[in-house]
Amino acid sequence: MHLIVIVIALFAERALGQLKRWRDTDGFARYVALIESSRIGRRWLAQPAGVLVIVPPVLIVALLQWAIAEYLWLGFQLAFGVFILMLTFGPRDLWEDVYALAHARGEADHDSAEARAVSLCRRASGRAAVDINGRTIVGAVLIQGHERVLAVLLWFLVAGPAGALFYRSVRELPALAARGTGSRAMRRTAEYVHGLAAWIPARLCVLIYALVGNTRGALGAWPSARATTHASASASWRLLAAVGRGALGSSPRVDSPRYDRYLNDTLLEALGLISRSLLVLLAGLALLTIFGVLR
Image (cartoon, rainbow, N blue to C red; front, top):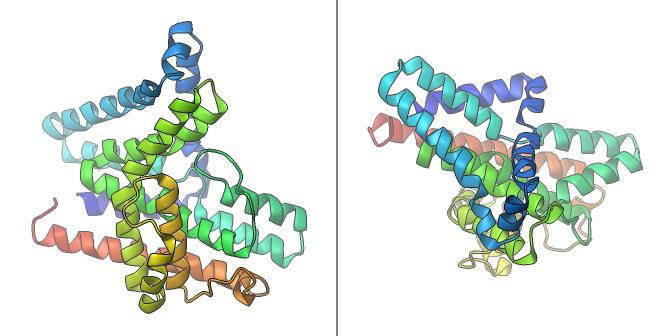
């Protein structure tokens, strides 16, 4: 069931680009804004406990998931899983974003290229990266491969639609807290919860990057990230970027030609690495399904 749901959702997500607007983060943002509209809600969201705002929607989906599995036909369970999984991808298609950036660079549309690069490199907290260069952009694409697709799928394998929605909500919360009325303590808590939720998926992701890419380069870059055991989100992002660039066989130097003259080619290679990682994840899921570990 998990494998069928994931394959259908991935196919539909890539084939029907117009559906990306259905995954817009405004739904979760409006939900948070509704809570902020009341005095009690604002006081709650200003505290570290405000991160619990993600619990009600995840709990509702979990209850629906259980009820559908227990009382309805298998087709409803399949449709519900595909629907939630498609909502939790993105919100934008990573491949479309990278192709658009490469096209803007190829057409020498500097303003568009800069805007798209800034968007790709924007941190989970909503803040822009301090320094945007070719090396940073490649690292951001490798991180977004985890954030937009691979981590969502890994959480879906663990807890079904509720798991996918949980990770999507946890990922969006730091940026919403930074834009809203959340205190500094609440923002730090949201970022920490995000880091905890990403800790295992990020390390599984870099192992797959190393497997499908330049293994020696990936393993050689791992110690440079200095993030093997840290639970913070920033540590996981450093690890994903460093090991991913190593898996591409890229030089750690900022001024490497791959990050300057051949940046478009390197970006497409990064997408290829993410695509191969996705295939490995699906192959592993197929084996687990065949041996009865998953259904």
